[in-house]
Length: 124
Image (cartoon, rainbow, N blue to C red; front, side):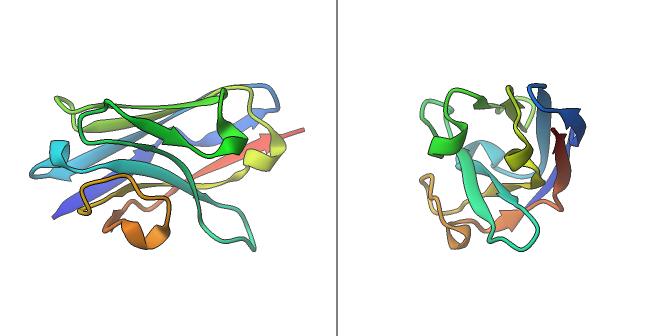
C-alpha cells in the first residue's frame, strides 16, 4: 500500500515555472513506476510524464516535451515534476500516481495508487 501526497501547485503567469512534489508513504516505493497526470475542467484525466522505478527511463506527452521534467529520489520517496515555460493550456489539477504493473503506462487504469491532486493555474 502506498499513500501519495502532492504539493507545489499554485497560480503562475504564462512563461513561468512551478515545481510539483509527490511524497510517497509506504513500503517499496522504489519498486513502483511513477507518473503525473492532469485533469482540466470538463476533460479526461491525461498522462503528462512517467518515470521507471530506477529513474533510468522517463516519458512525457508531446505537449510538454522540452518544458516539463520528471525525476525521482528513491532515498527520499519523492517524485518531482519541474514545469517550465508554462502555458494557459497547462491549467489543470495535477495528480501523482504509482503503478504495480512494473512499467510506465499512459492510461489511467495502469495505476493503482493516486494522490489527492494539486491545482495548477496559468494566467495569460
